[in-house]
Image 1 (spheres, rainbow, N blue to C red):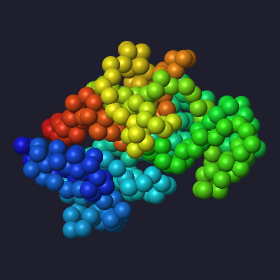
Image 2 (cartoon, rainbow, N blue to C red; image 1 turned 90 degrees about the horizontal axis):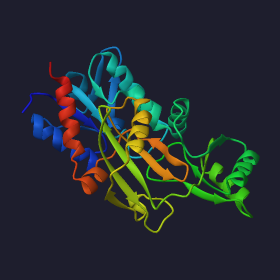
Image 3 (cartoon, helix red, strand yellow; image 1 turned 90 degrees about the vertical axis):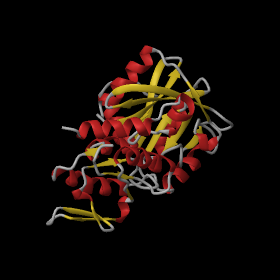
Image 4 (cartoon, rainbow, N blue to C red; image 1 turned 60 degrees about the vertical axis):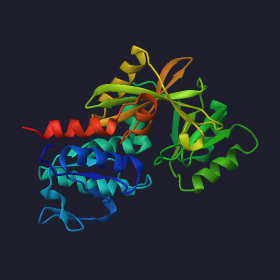
Length: 293
């Protein structure tokens, strides 16, 4: 075992957080799961306490999650960790890199600046322009800027209830509306995973009874062997963010593969269930090897 003290920032009790904490404990003998909403940063003394533990005394932090739900609060928590990096403690992935991916609009802007193909997307705060966008697309998915696993997303079609549905979506807290054309997919989309920028595997999320492929909506993980074209596209997308571990959401379309998003945190479950790849253990090894002189 390596004599490192590495804490996992995540959601205590959640499967992925505990899976990563288990892997790190198995390799180092040290276990610490940090709920970021319960930390206190002292800028003058350069300390970051979680209970009785000063995280500044540890060798590294690994960010698995930054809260139980996606929200603007995530940026405040990441800002604390961004300053924390200044005192020299390694953080995986770097907070500023996560910031570029955790907000759906920020992620899309970065991908578009990198000329990565995506489904047609319109951003507006104007109801009339939103109605026009849905008319243009025929059918669209309105997506909250902060969400995962399709939470809060709404499918809206051009027709009688288009405007009222858009108004309801905006009034539910979505001032800036992210409107993406609903494209035909072959019953699945893909999670293409990278560790330290290196490709490690791909799983498919196959549709259940819902329009989306999320397992919470009945979707199923299956192994998948992508083409070199898909891997190369996903690699180009993740290169823009330089995250230590990520999964790139790819969809095959009649116009070629496109990217939905690059995950700020990446997922373990699809890789282990579909591909028998223990990404948590690989991630722990990656961090330890990086820390070694």
